Image 1 (cartoon, rainbow, N blue to C red):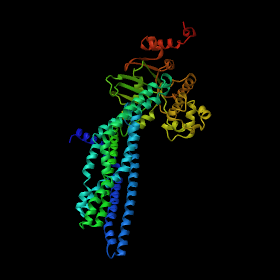
Image 2 (cartoon, helix red, strand yellow):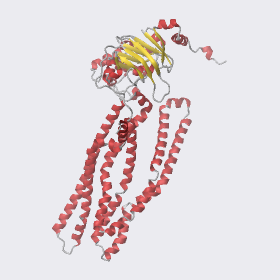
Image 3 (cartoon, helix red, strand yellow):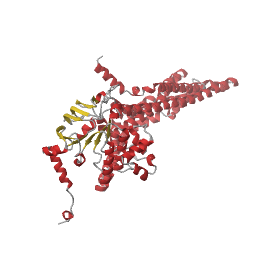
Image 4 (cartoon, rainbow, N blue to C red):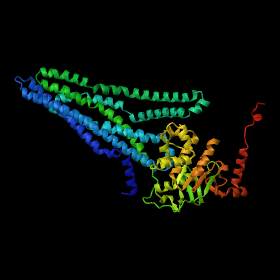
Length: 598
């Protein structure tokens, strides 16, 4: 078999439900076996009803034999309940173990896939996979697998027992099956298509609600609520119509199936035919009574199949999405990497294209950054500045060329080696919903409290942590650090980078959205962070990089010039024009005489 066919077969196997849940096969099959024992014990207790009733109706009943049979029957009932409870205990423990295995695997994989996949997929879709879809598999393993053995074995074993007891009543008990199955067919006709329509309608409602909540500041400013609410109302009406159509299509068949698979219709049919047979002497009363207990057990065992099918559909949909994440190619990593010789960085003929885009984000870019120097990347929006900054810590792999850190291709370094060499300070700071202390030591979990305080002090964050936060370093920030101001969040992330103490710092303009007071404090923190380090700055404010050792000017993914500030201004090239525009912008402002009405 060719390697291509092997890979294709492996992909198909990954999309199989039973393959995905295979890590807990032991619990699944043990739970099924114990559940089957529960069913056998239950049917055995029912079968003992026949000799018990015969003994009770005998002319000279034997009390000892009667009590023995009753004791065995009660023991089997107790064993059935114990086995049933134990089977669900096993399956639930397996489901929790599966949840742990899958979430660990998926989160580990997310840390190894290209950042582009994470950005394009979005947090909502990834949250659904890691949380909701894994939870759906948990429910399937916990609640479904014990019932599979019982649900699919009960009709089979029950019919065999009924045929042994009396084939006539057995066929009579099954007389309602064909009509009930026809009802189930109509109830689940086009189920997949209808379910997809309902799911899409629900997704539209969720999307509109998220849009309304996340954009509340915009809605309150520009919209009186009628526009956004109208979108919600329209989405809700579409979902209601879709659900109503599905319900009206399936309710008749579902009602027929539910009615005919219930105990009462079967009991009435057996009584209508069985009582005359008993009177005529062609049927024993104990056997009729046995059927009145056994036949409803068989017919009612069909009903859980409907519920199991629903769980199976949900689990299969979850597996499909998990399989899509599993198919994303990982960034390849060497097992034993080469350590960098120094803190220099070099881009050699780097070309990069984002997935799904026709044009290159970078084309044949070459930049040398000596250790211990400051290099600024400038250029118009879309020039490729942030792309270079994110390629250095290997958020993506280059399409062509290579990036070297300390003389080593970053593809020949392990993740740990690269993270120890390069720290990244994002333009939009991100904090976990955790304590200040844990956020600062995120890149160095074993850091001492003294080291954390020293890093926060260097980042100009210690004072506000102690004076403004109720529990100091143990204060828990909100989701994404929402309880802190933007400048405070940025100083916490700089403290994190200071504590990490990487020799190379990649800085995506950390002061772009800071107010003057916070900007001054952030600049002090950055000065401490960059002391003795190689600093690569994505610059939006040209005034912050006039003292850089090297300024690299980019346009449309290409390097068009480089040099110091003075050299580039003297060259009167693209940088000189950017500087001229920047100086003019500094003198811009609103004057009262220009704002007064004519």
